[in-house]
Structures are given as C-alpha cells and as structure tokens.
Image 1 (cartoon, rainbow, N blue to C red):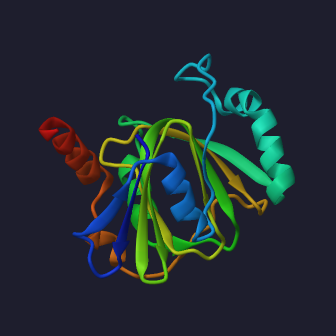
Image 2: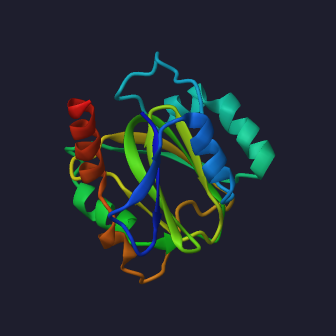
Image 3: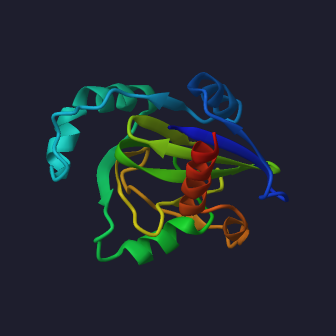
Length: 192
C-alpha cells in the first residue's frame, strides 16, 4: 500500500499519514511532485534485463519523454544479494539535490522517498505501480532498506543520468528508515 507521511522537519517522531491515493496525489501536487499509478506488465519475469523492461514500457516512457523532455533513462534493480547494496544504500540515504527533474517508476518491490520541502519532510512509501517525480533542486533522499528489493525505471532530463549534489545536511538520520516504517505498518495492521 502506498503511503505518505508528512512531518515537520524538527519533529520526526510525529507525522500525519495518508493512504488514499487521491489525497497523496493532492498533497504531493502542492509541492510540485507528480505521484501516479501505472499498470504493471505482469508478463515480465523477475530476472528480465533492462532492454526488455524498457521495451515493455516504451509507450509510457515516450509519453513522459514528450511531456517533460527526458533525455536519458535506465533501470535499477537491487536485491538482498546485490554485492553493493550497503554502499548504494548509504549513497542514496544522504540528502542531495539534482540539477534536473527526475522520475521513478516502481516495477517491483518498494522504497521510501523523503522530500525536504521548506520546513517539512514528505515521506513517500512507493510500491509496485507507483510513479513519483522529484523536481530539480529539491533536497531529498531515498531508503531501500537493509535487504532491498526494488526495480525501477529512472528518467532524467539530462543525458548524464543520476548525478547528485550532496547537501551535507544530516537530517536523514532523524527520520524513520524503510525497515522501521514497514515494521510500524505491520504492527498497526496486527493491532487492528
């Protein structure tokens, strides 16, 4: 289930949670972030290569390319046995900005995006079928968890792909991780 939690940047223990897709879209739209749901091509197997994924979503990618002028795109697939999972997680967990506008579409698995806008942090749990944009120069970070499982298409408005400018702000360490967020949701579901 997709989830948005909005925190004050100074109160990472208390956030307002939203699970309704329409409300999530509205909340994120207000900060210039596109959030949407795309259909999943179920025929794709877990181990398909980047070329096969991009072919399957070619029509959707072309629509976004026309709409936003994307110049490059790729597929990132990280699993619990990925040899660089710890290094990748640490890199993505550091608050950073990009000079370009970027979009992520989750083909499988999940991840947690943190968008630091003004004095708030918007924490978005993205799962299979979720599409999220990050506007240029928006401070953000991403947590894929200690045992990651996600495959996403990444689209960029520059030809260089993923290039981060790290802010040096240590704010990311104050907010719940993906693993903590999932454990909390599981505990809430069990108590309901």
